[in-house]
Length: 279
Image (cartoon, rainbow, N blue to C red; front, side, top):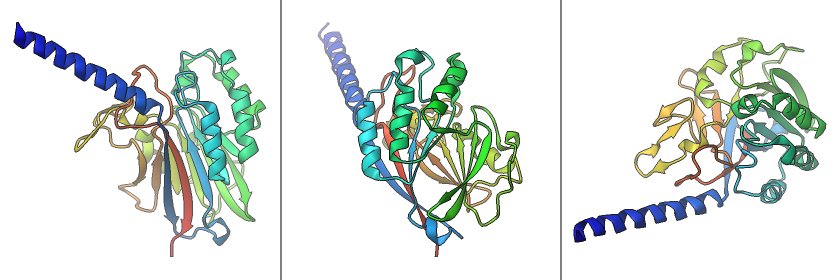
């Protein structure tokens, strides 16, 4: 009996520690500064700063909107990219200050967004798109545009949830010397994004969805992510294409949670990417 009691107390203690640590991790924001060097980056885009925000899962977020906005403002980005799942599928959109959030982002820097699987499955996609657009944020669901930033051109392409660049109608051709950024929610399709449309060859793809693998164990890494299953390949940070080493993928671990309520060794993630000209 003493042995069983000891085992029970040990399991209870471990469970409490797990829950407390998960509670702490959910509420601690990781500000992640990364640099990507691109060949032929126009000199006027050297040191362009991009904030990448994904998977906020309002209202399942434990990092407040005010905290996010404060950190983004301090980063002083040139542009902000939102790569889907801004709301959780269980959220009541009428109770989420999405339009206000978008306006606040736009007051910091031009902001661009695509949808994720939670917007699609929430049954509120049309309303979500309307609120995003009314906020001033540019919605890039299967569309393309060319920006002028610091007197240089930068191309953006966005695909909606479960779509690919071959579904994007080109309003104008993208010159070979114009850097091209792709917004696409699902990182598991990275290589397919590169081959889907020969006219759209993104230098950098920005994604979310994987939630960092939710639980990250020392020496093992991420355990599970949607779309990739156990021991997922693309979960956080920067990856290089196996087929074309000039093409890169940036994955955000996201901010909020969905069904599983804890993050272990996997804090909510705000990515700040600085582009540099490769010498």
